[in-house]
Every structure is written in structure tokens, then in C-alpha cells.
Image (cartoon, rainbow, N blue to C red; front, side, top):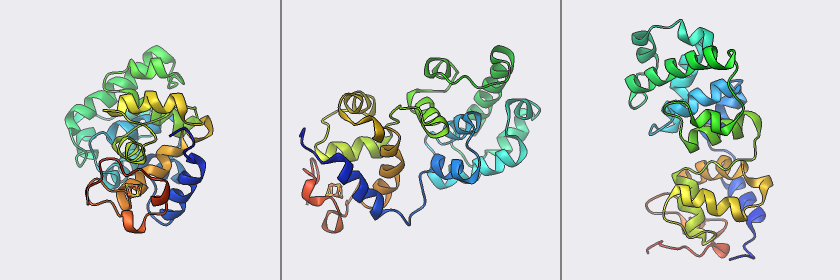
Length: 217
Ligand code: SF4
């Protein structure tokens, strides 16, 4: 679908969810937690955790520690308590402490602004690194989560089997000015309109452009 009007579609999706809570990382950035380190840590916290919980947990953590130096002053049990509502809190606490210490020891206390260096940290995968770089620094990297994957496949804009393949396909065809925007828009759009089950196609603003691939009923 090379003539898919992606700019117009994304603009209509954005309009449909403009009053909804923003995706967690974008919301935190807009609240002032926008450093690369804060975005990296909150993105890590958000893995397999609901957006609302990620936001609450990140706010609580950053009220106590917002830099690698402040983070490593916390002991492990204290950190686990602070992020207890996130899934896999003990494992994430260990990762956060390890990453923070590595940033101090190997990078002079400054979070590296480089994708390959970020994914070298334990627990930091492509989505976490892409989201952190994209939201904190506006790097043109596409962060594909389950919402972006599901919706772009339903549109028929891509035809891929998993989020990593979707990222590769989008990197090939999505205009670069939308690489960060697509995640910002499609996370709330996927929660409120193009939901996993029972998408609201009857009231969807992009139904005329959507191939509704795999949508039943
Ligand atoms: S028409 Fe349905 S499947 Fe297509 S984007 Fe809208 S809600 Fe999703």
C-alpha cells in the first residue's frame, strides 16, 4: 500500500486521542523527567508493565534518585521497594543499579547517546534503547511496541510477524519525520480505539484508509 496517506492517518489518530493520557515516556518527559538517563530507567521500568504503573513508579523513584550517582547510593532493598509495583521489580532493581554503576565507571557518569552502547547494558533491548533515545533526544529511531506493531499491520501499511520485523519494515518505508511520532500517537490510540480485542472500527477516524487486516466482525 505505497499510496497509504500515512501523515494524514497519523494526524487523525492523534486528534482522536488528544485528550487521553500520553504514552508513559512522553508524559514523563513533559513533566520534566526528560534526561536520557531518566528515559532509559523509566523505559526499563515499563517493560511488561502497564503505562499508568510505569508512570507512577518512575515518578516515585525519581523523587528519590534522578542520576546515576544518586541511584547507586540506594541499597538494593530500598530500590526494590520504590519500584515494587513494576513487574520483575527485583531483577529490574539489579539492572538499574548495574547500569548506573557502569555509567559512572565506564562513561564518566554520562549516559551514552549511542544505540549500540545502550543495548550493551544488561536488560536494555532494542525497544528500550530506541524509546529512550527517541523521546529524550529526538533521535530518529522507531520504537515499536505491541500497539505500533498491531495497528500498522491492521492498516496494511506493513505485513510482519513480530515487532522487530515491523521496526525493520517501518524503517524502510515510514517518512523519517514520523519515526518518534508514531509511537507517541499509536500507544494511546491502541489503548482507546484500535484495541487488541474489539477495536472500535465503527467510530474510527481512519476506517476509510484501513485494510482492517485480521480484524474479525
Ligand atoms: S478501522 Fe479498526 S482496525 Fe483500522 S485502525 Fe481503526 S480501529 Fe484499527
